[in-house]
Image (cartoon, rainbow, N blue to C red):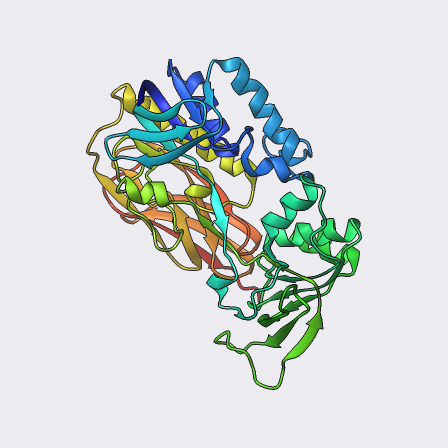
Length: 418
């Protein structure tokens, strides 16, 4: 077994991992190792040929490929060591990574700090309890995106999309442009799961119908999908008898949510948050295991790649501080509490005495006009007016000033006008 010793090891070379590796070098880490199981850098951005990336960071509309390439060029010129085709098999709580590659065999990587940036995965048909046959033609939206954008293969001619997540919405437009008839998008929830701009640009502008409070109840077909049964659902998300109808198609595309990829995190003993499905993090994105950090969609599923990159940079600065001895090995923490209308907040805790933090949250329901407040021990840390909030859209904000020893409560109160 080949043994390697580095200052910072980053697992995953998508947008979070690229940003983390680059920022670690900028922050003074001498030896930074970036591990990626794929044959190329960029992660999911390789197959994202649509634009809309980079508006916050670069001030212009970029495709996913262009956004990734901007970071790849900097990483390649920075002195970051890259190992492609290398699969991380295990991360230990002692910051040792066991990995393997075709060219080098087994690797044991000892790191001063580890940054987890494995991204997320899509929910499958089994996870949303769709009954019926198991024919060809049932694919996740990400799989369809790769087939169409990278492999040049059209996986069907008549498609039904279940779920209104952003990848599914974007693929509704992409499939239409490639000549696949998109019959409709069905969403089990009473509100769309994707960003408003994607509803408008990908469905409305192409006259693709969106049916809310409706789901696929059965897949029909032996060798290939022939049709799906859809039905309205009640307030408990149960199909309503008598509302079922059959829709002919040869492709069912699943856009039913993303789950942070945390098998390695669990193996390292990292505590996970049941709301985000990602690690419990502090203000420098360190997990419950000292010296192990997490960022990007492995921490929480973001909506904007710009936020993914920001989280990677936060984790990298924390990792460099850790190996330099600037972080307490057993800090005292103040919990961050999700209050009124807040679904979750990341990070979930702050180090007592830390000088501010970058926080991310999602709301529980759509709000037209509201006020975001952060309070601690009766002291107002910040207050900000917001408009047009929706659960799919992440809200990012900064806390300034030193954090005391009282819990931080984050709430969003709706403003009502008479």
